[in-house]
Length: 295
Image 1 (cartoon, rainbow, N blue to C red):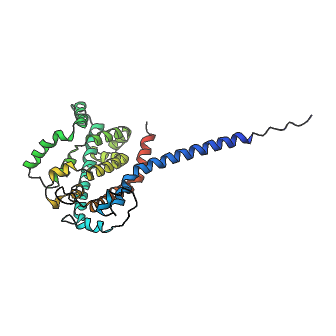
Image 2: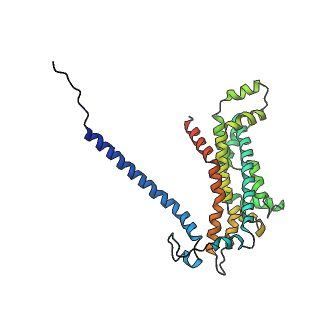
Image 3: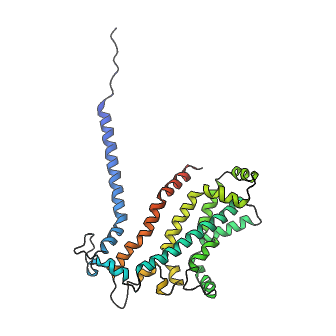
């Protein structure tokens, strides 16, 4: 009997499959690169405009300047009456204070809603969620009246102190959902060892909810640093201005506006946000991955 030799798979279909897969990958990567360019174009245009003369910014909208003018940075740094470092320092003071307040107060409020039983808990939790649908403009005038009577106008207190009172319902809800995913057996084991509720919060709950804390830190930093309306309402003197208010000083309706200096300082104003993202990038990715594995 003749030996039966196994038939070899055809090479042509494999080549066609690999070719189709490679073409699909090239198409997907090309599409993603195109979307990235569209999203990054405003930032690139701002960076390019920071190196252009004022007369060229709007007449030549291309990314490559015809004439470089790095003096925009030196003029913008000291061209608004104060050094721009003052506005960055003020923004960092307000932002760091808001971050600390939100992390502390919202985590405590979330711990109470997630672990304790008290009268009217569901009602208070519903009222807290209802504040998410309340626009900021609806409470702006009553809040201004309160802070005016407290003589807090033109200080950083109206921008920082409320954060220590758990006023951001979004972060409370986020942390409540995260704490509920932590097994109660850990609390019970700690109570058997003699831990009180605050020790359970500090030594067990807080370390385990690090992804939620990182998310709160990043979003609070960005939202507070970029906030314009609240800072415009409560800060009146130039020496108290933050970065968003400092940038408006380069615009003047009655005389010429320094667009080049404004774009130069806008570029520098992005650095704190970028640094914050780079510092917490690893933690943020870990938090998203951890959240994705739950459920």
